[in-house]
Length: 145
Ligand code: THU
Image (cartoon, rainbow, N blue to C red; front, side):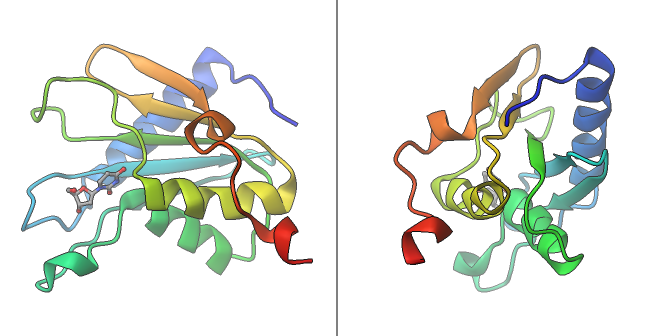
């Protein structure tokens, strides 16, 4: 079931993502990303990107946040992930999760039967898109049973 967020919930979630972005370890790209996942019990779990001297091993903020959620025992209940980029980079357009992160988000979404509303945060704009729009016809855990 998809839920709508109140303005307050949305603002709080975006603020949590921005705060998480401050902890990004991104010395190679200098592109700090923050992510915050809102769950149906009100919990917010955050993550930021973690790069590596072996560049290709970088972990995106969304993947780190989902991993933290799994590590805390969550197996569903994801309502809304938010993602923020650095304020001073790019053209200010909303930043959307990369392809791999869409798949990673889909795992926890499908487990709980939700179609999360993804908040893609830009300079002056928040783009709200369902995960199913970002990743149509997703492969997921249900295919394996
Ligand atoms: N990155 C994220 O953390 N999330 C995204 O959705 C896009 C890209 C990170 C990966 C890398 O550390 C840096 O941004 C530049 O690509």
